[in-house]
Image (cartoon, rainbow, N blue to C red):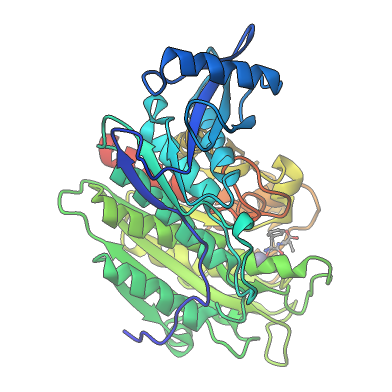
Length: 496
Ligand code: BES
Ligand code: ZN
Ligand code: ZN
C-alpha cells in the first residue's frame, strides 16, 4: 500500500484521562449545577466541603447564575481552587444524555488558555461526558502559519473524575472516530482528492486490522462503474473506489456501508453559483463518516461484519466532462439519462450500492451530502432518513438518541414518475422542484437488491456547520453521522 499521502493538518484534541480524585495539576475544575427553583444547585457530591459549597453557591448567586443548561459561570478565589467553571445542566427533571454532552461540550469550549482541566460530571454518565467534552474541545486551525495566542489555545488535557472506568476507552474511540471524520471533511480539496483520500483512509484502516482495496480510474472503467467514471472524468484527478472490510470473529450479521465521496462538487457542466461553493469541500462527508465508523467498529471489536464501499471523485467542468443529455450505464447495467451534472452523488452511490449488494449483506446503509432539498425540508441539523420502513425508523431513532437528530421521510410513489426518462431506465434529476430529497431517495432505491434492509441518510446540512459553534459541534465539519452509524452497528451486533 502506498504511504506517500497524509493530511496537511488535523484538529487539536485534548489528551484525555481518568482519575478517582481531583488531580493536583488541574488548572480548572468543571462542576455541574442544576437549575433549582431558588437558583443553581450544586450537583456533585464529595468534591467540596459543605463550607466550600456554600461559598460556591454564594458566588454563583452573586454572578446571576441560574443553572440552565449550557450556562457557563467562572469563579476564582473560592474553595481553594484556581478556577471553578460551573456548567448548567438545566432542570434535573428534564435532564438527559444530550443535555450532558452539550453542557460538557460548551464547558470544554470555554476553557481556552487552560492547560489541564478536571471534569466532575462523570457521575451523570461518563461516556456522554467524555464524548461531549472531547468533541467540544476539538479545534481545527488547518494550515494557519501564525502561532495561536495562548489565551485562545484549546484546553490541552482533560481529566475525568470518575469511580468507574469501563466506558472510558470506548467513549474515547468514538470521539477519536468523529474527530477523524471531521479532519477529513475539513481538509481542502487541494490536499484531499480521490487518489490521496483513498490512500490516507486505507493506511489508517490497515493500522487497525481492516482489509483494504483501491480500484483506480482505469480499473473502474474496465469493470463497468459507469457512474463513478462519468462523474470523475472531468477532473485531472481520476476517481477511486475504496473498499474496507472488517470481518468480526463471531458475527451473525453483515452490514454494508456506502458513503458519497465527492472531494469537490463544482456541479460540473451544470455549474454551481460561486457564492459558498467553497463549502463543497464537504461533499465527501458521507464517505468520511462511513470510513470512520468502519474503523471504529474494528477498534471496538463489535460483533458484526462491516464492509465499506466508498466511491471517490471530483466533479469538475472540463473538455472531458460528462454532459447533460449523456446516457450512462451504471455498474450492474441500468442506464441513466443525465439531466443535470450537479446531481452527481446518486450516480457514484448507485455504482457503489450495486457493488455492495453483490456481497449479500443483511443491511445496507448509505449516507451522503446529497441534496439541497434536505436543507429545505428539515433544516441544517436534521438528517433525512429514507429506506425500508422498519430499518429506516430504527436508524432515525438511534440518531436522535446519540444527539445526531434524524427524521424518517417517505419515498412517495409519484417520485417514480419524476425520475422517468424517454431514453434510459432513469433520469438523474427530477422533473419538478418538489420533494428533491425524496426524488434522490427513489433514484437510489432502484439500486438496492430486494432482500436487503436499506437506509439512506441525506446529511447535506448536518455534515457541515456553516454557522457558529454550538454544544459540542464546532464550525465547519461536524463528524455527523459517525455516532449514529457506530451506534447502529452496535445495536445490530446486540439484537441482530
Ligand atoms: N452536493 C450537492 C448537495 C448539497 C447542497 C450538499 C448543499 C450540501 C449543501 C449535490 O450534489 C447537488 O448539487 N444536488 C443538487 C441536485 C439537483 C441538481 C437535482 C441539488 O440539491 O441542487
Ligand atoms: Zn452536485
Ligand atoms: Zn454533490
